[in-house]
Image 1 (cartoon, rainbow, N blue to C red):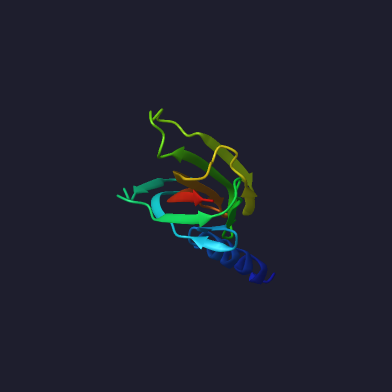
Image 2: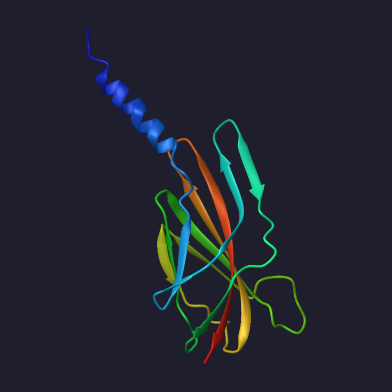
Length: 150
């Protein structure tokens, strides 16, 4: 009779991988952490999907003293496969409704230098992390505001 140990090890590995939490994401500028609020999450399996919105009233504002363009550094947790972002100019005279710039970083980490950000303006940044484990996948979205001062 063959040992069932390899099958048991495989099942435990699958269960552990599928029980992992969302990977989360950290943003930094010039080595300083940027505080964010969670806006929404989506988690799913082959059988079901759940979605939750947090509806944050006000995202934290971080003021950075730097020369533009500043580099936004992203570091997501295990399982993250893509980091997407959208930048909105909160000081624009006429709010067009859409982002002034967007980006996609493949993998768990990377940096992006927005070309549309200028000094003495305030921006809202939406960061979306796409993640996948063995039997679950999902997304989580975070928000922060950023003001660049010379």
